[in-house]
Image (cartoon, rainbow, N blue to C red; front, side, top):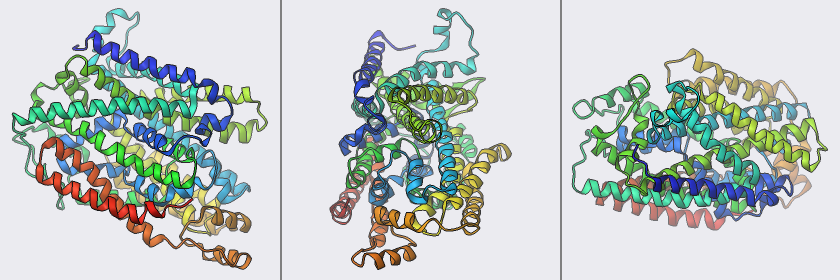
Length: 608
């Protein structure tokens, strides 16, 4: 163990600081439910954007991104489209404003604005809450597993075991460490609510920025005196039909990793990611911390600005760190300890192992505090979203609508603790970070796509269509991983989508349309584009001066340009760390040109 007392002190000071934030903001957060869950809609858009970015700078995702950059090189800039990362561009351009216009507290509550208050709306509301809680549990377990694996590198169990009065199976040591740090995240999240999360995320972002810059500098200094040995094609972001990258004479084990990932047919993977990604992005944010930050903004215009700000402050900083660790891992691969469990080689250990090997005293503490902060940000934001659904969409809606302030407060606290306990139990069954990631973004979100695309763009889609579409996708999403155990989840996304679309179509056409008044109110308030002509014509009869949303073409162009802009923000810091002057100039020019275009064609035309 290379940690010193200076490193431990830095980490302890950080943990105490964020805990005190929760204590100091407890009174403010407990004023009412809106203050607790949304910060009273008084938080500035740039703070919410920074908080959102901090929440996305999660430790498990960072470990995965370092691994794929190490293995796939510059081609890895496309793989985060599995999430998809460009969903932030759809949100920035139009969907954040649409969502914020609804003036609701959670995504499930939004259902009432679209489908009314009938039995179909109740069923739709229920299925959204179920999906939200399953996805929140998945993300909580995902972060929990990643944190435990990370900490185990720095605090080996053989050092701790003599001081613990009970035995722990080595396979569950990461889970024990995960529980310890989870307690701190629970503390400030449960006490301080959204405002506490945002301020803690500000502290976390500052720490992570310092850590990212420092590790990038260390990597660049190492690269200045050594040669980076990588396969042909590693430095090229473009690709052919197959990956065509052979590590045989460099690090032969990486070829096994590529085969296990099932990414050899790279063009097919890209086509599936793009197909799924566009649909998932058009569906709007899933019911998690991202949606809660949008709903917490002060206006629709600020919601769009907040979503755009996320890419600006997240991508460059995060990828400085990712590129730094990947370069150090490649230069000093023989010094990394990547063996876990029963002699299994785990490339997800590159990040923590590189820190353990190369970070000097003090810097190690900053890096660890920064990455633990990344875990805290993701965990706390997701936990806040889960609390919102339990309290607002279950307890107050169905169990106790007239609950007192103290009862609501007690339910907020207890629901948060319950979600953490359940996510920890789920974490014990997770094999690794990548398996959880693939299930969440490919299988689980595959069940979400069809219903949540149609809800924005098609007037005839009703609550029964929504319910049956979600259910028809959610059940297979939970079952397919058990049946197709050796199949990448992305490969059966089209089948999930087809089943879900059938549920949407049959549910809608075998039942009556949504009440006309509900559709008119929704269309007038949210002002979406899409297939709304019958509703638009009815409004025109009542209000001849009403104008429909005609910005589809402009929004579509802005999405394409915005995705290029975001990809440039990803590639630039990688090339900076690699010190490749030509690509740096090209990336900077692309970012500048797309920024000017978006300023004129998006930002200047944002409206409430």
